[in-house]
Length: 200
Image (cartoon, rainbow, N blue to C red; front, side, top):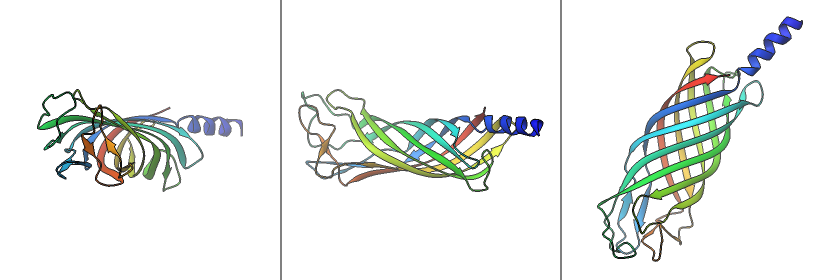
C-alpha cells in the first residue's frame, strides 16, 4: 500500500507541465475612421508558452502566453499625430495573456485529446511613433492532442481561437488624435501550433 501511494504521488507530481509552442496565426482587422477601409492584420508566425498545474485527475489549471509579430496594411486617410508619414505596412505585435485550463477527454492528464480555454487580456503594440498601445479583455478556446514521447516529454498539437472585446463606438491607437477605429465589437484570430511539453 505504501509503495502504491508513493507511485501515485510521483504520477501526480508529473501532471504539471511547461510547454513551448511555435505556429501560425491568421485573422483580425480594424477600420480606417476616415475612409472606411478595412485594415487586416496579416497572417504570420507565432510563439507561445504555457504552464499547467494539476487540478484533478483529468484537468489542469493553465497560464498561457502567446505573441505574434505581424503587420497591418495601412490605407489611412488620417496622418499619424505629429505629421509623420504612415508606412504602408504598419508593424504590429499582438500578445495574449490568458488564465484558464485544460481538460483531457480520455480522462487522464498527459495523453490524448484535450480541450483548452482561458480569459485575460490582449496587448496590441503598433511599432510606429504616434500610435499608442491598446490593452483589451479577451478569451480563447482550443482543442489539442498530446502525444507522449516518453515519461516526461510529449509532442503537442493545438488549434486555438481568440476573441478580443472592444467598444465598437470607440477609437483605438489614439495618441493626440484618433487614427483607427474598430469596425465591430470584437477582433477574432485563430492559430495552429505545435509544442514540446515537459512534465514535472
